[in-house]
Image (tube, rainbow, N blue to C red; front, side, top):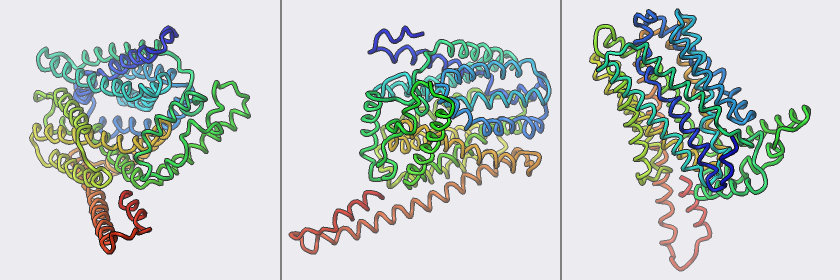
Amino acid sequence: MDCYRTSPSNSWIYPTVILCLFGFFSTMRPSEPFLVPYLSGPNKNLSSTEITNEILPVWTYSYLVLLLPVFILTDYVRYKPVLILQGISFIITWLLLLFGQGVKAMQAVEFFFGIVTATEVAYYAYIYSVVSPEHYQRVSGYCRSITLVAYTAGSVLAQLLVSLAKLSYFYLNVITMVSVSMACLFSFFLPMPQKSMFFHAKRSKEVKKSLSMSTVLEEPYEREAPGCEEEKPTSEKPSASGNLNDGQLSSPKLENMTLKVFAQWFQDLKECYRSKHLFYWSLWWAFSTAGFHQVLNYVQILWDYKAPSQDSSIYNGAVEAIATFGGAVAAFAVGYVKVNWDLLGELALGIFSVVSAGSLLLMHYMTNIWACYAGYLIFKSNYMLLITIAVFQIAVNLSVERYALVFGINTFIALVIQTIMTVIVVDQRGLNLPISIQFLVYGSYFAVIAGIFLMRSIYIIYSAKYRKEVQIPAPSQNPDVPHPEEPSIVIMCTKL
């Protein structure tokens, strides 16, 4: 397991390759685009009502309950055990899908898949503990892109097997079972990290390296999040997490240090969210992600309602592949767009949220399945474009440690919102709305988000224009006389 350390210059290659293989096989799941047709078909013979109201909500509830404990456990046990847990949960999920029968068994499927999604944090955080900071950007790109490739490949394979080979949905789940078993196998070959972001933090020279990198990232944006940048990153604070180096502490001291870590997390989050720029981008992230996952969770029910899989050919796999590819292209293109995101970022969020609302309302009002497919393509590509911008706008202001905290809290808030939405809209204890009406609610939900950010963007643009007009007359009164108040005006304009 330690053979990759023999060449310091290449020490990042071995864990990156293994992690990418794990990511590919865990995401290459051809059965997913056809999950609802499989559950409602002869293999499971479940009704649409049972799937919508009794089975699918379990995933949302279990994910919410597990997310924060898993987030803490992931850092404490240093990632690898959690990745192994994810691999095992994958296998249990698909064993139950293949051989389980009835509503209770499928609810167990959703519970174990909740474990799978809650442990995803370990996949994206693991690499920061085994490679040096100069490789973070490259390795993160590899890990994220391989999952997009795998999901697209799985969706294309599924569509080809269903449409051309007329393969049963059962065998798509068999292929997925083999794929996730390979992922579980690769998880055992990952090197065990010697450090983590918080409980086993970096020290001495490694801290200085990471600190210098985060300083470079934070410096250009210092004006926007003064509270967040004035403090040093979490990893530099030995009082919080630096002393938990090897885990060899007595129980009282460990408990004391754990409390200090939690206190430091709270302080870091308070400082970070004090930045209005970061706060509003995080707000959009949380609300939009909640709506996005809610749509993804129930869109197959809508497709099956518009065009029942038993009576017509379905193209769920092709649609998922095109939507993922389109979203990846849009996200890639963001890197080449020159926009003043400080001034126009929230206007973009508002405009594209209008597009999301329109695509969901199109899916509600149109009875044609192809119109529903088109609406979904627009919706998913649109979200992937915007979430890429949001991640960049948030991450560029933060160190790796603080980004992990903000990401975790944003995801948790999104899950709380999604859970509330599920209880009110879907659950039998709530309104228990029909699937077509649900998408009217989701479209209206994104319309409200659009309205909020459009109004705020108008305020930002108007304020910037007003301050610019105030700034211009000052030097024109006497160009030879310096004005002591001028720097403060410039700073105020820059903040906006």
